[in-house]
Amino acid sequence: MLEDHLVEALNLLKKQPKHRCKVEIDLLVHFTQELPFFKQYYNQENGLTIHRECCKHMFLEVFQATDIVFHVDSIGTKFYVILDGHVEVLIKRRGYDELESVRILRQGESFGELALIHRQPRLATIRCVNNCYFAVLDKQQFQYILHYEQTKKIEQNIDYFAQISIFNQLNRTQLTQIYLNSFLYEYEKNQIVLQVGDKSDSFLIVKSGLFQVRKQMNKSHPLILFEIGELQVFGFYHLFNKIPYEFQIICLSPKGQIYKIHRTSLIEKIFEGHTEDLEKHMQEINCYVNFKVHQEQNTHLKYPRYFQIKTQCDQDNEIQEEYIKSCRNKESKNQNYKSRNQLIKQKMDTMIEQSKRKLGLTSTIPKFNSLFQIFLKSHRGLKENQRQNISSLKDTMTRQFGSSSHFYHNDDQPNNPFITFRSSSPTMKNQGKQFLTLRTYNSQRTIVKSSQHYNQNFQFQDNNNSKHFQTQKNYISLSPNVMKLKVYKH
Image (cartoon, rainbow, N blue to C red; front, top):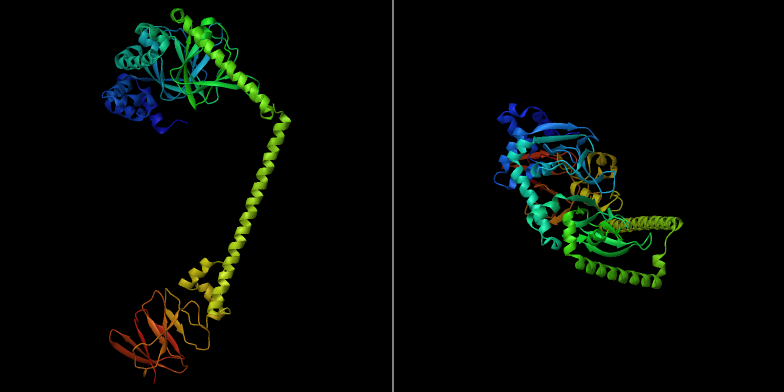
């Protein structure tokens, strides 16, 4: 499924370049600016100019899966940028009829520049892996827009070859010939580069990544010899003496790149100048391999059980034992979890019982499931539906917050645990007698309650205006506007 911005770019590329207006070119630049091919030029001063010129002259070509874009040894007339899809690079191998896959090119990558720059036949065949869309420049426009930039990129790769010691005596033209005769292979982790017994038709130069060289002792335990990395060469001696490879090479890094360089007349000249060095280098490798093999054999004798070849039955038994261990570990974890929850519940119940004993109100305190609920209900009171279901709380002194407040005066009922009482001696006209004071949280009102049970006269003061009236059976209804309540005894 194509992305929206890519669909718009394809629609613009379908239009002939000579008919595109400036606005359409600007839109095409915007839709393709995230492609790696164009993004690489934005570090330069003329990067935007290069991008605009490409969008001005490029046109669209579409290929289906397994279609061939061009064949090896064909004449190059176009340069391609992959807008969507994957293509496979295939090359010829000496002595083989089938083409060999070198690498996969993906969205935002380009191909076809070598034949246009060096005016030579195509070095590889390009085959589509899936449906592909290409932005294409013809040879004339490529020479005008991208020839300098692509040539500079090739020169950087040639500079890389110049850093290798065996190429020190070569001039620039010879290095260019070696580069054009090389092919860049891509590998993923644990992918095999060379197998024991493979024909040595090329030698290797590591461009990026880390690779491991092994010698196959037996099927289950290969002998690890050494590792090779960037700028290191392998297989030069085998190619020189035309002997098969004795070692296996695999990729250790997530991704790795290796140049494979085939035998040519120029490589033959390099061999002639490094014959003694190659012989010496191979002797050193053989001595090191013999030492590692001898060391490995001694280790086999000392610790034979670590090098036993496991059968399929042994592997199945090991898998079954690991499964049983994992099941037991899960059961033990579940038991520990249950026991921990039980301990927490016991501690919580103990704390609740202790709080009940301290208050001495076990008959009226409702049962809660957790301390957290106790905390909430002790600070916020009970909900309306709970208040209706608990009959023992209806006759006690409670205060419901958020609406009209009510106070039930009854000395015979026990104290409510959700309301805090304190004893105080306020200055009031009560002939020096002390009363119990009820203070409710989150409120500015103070209610003073007499310790005796009799009819009372209450005086409400609101903004210095006094009002007297008789209450009905010790029942007080407080308005939200009342800020203070005074109680007098007659």
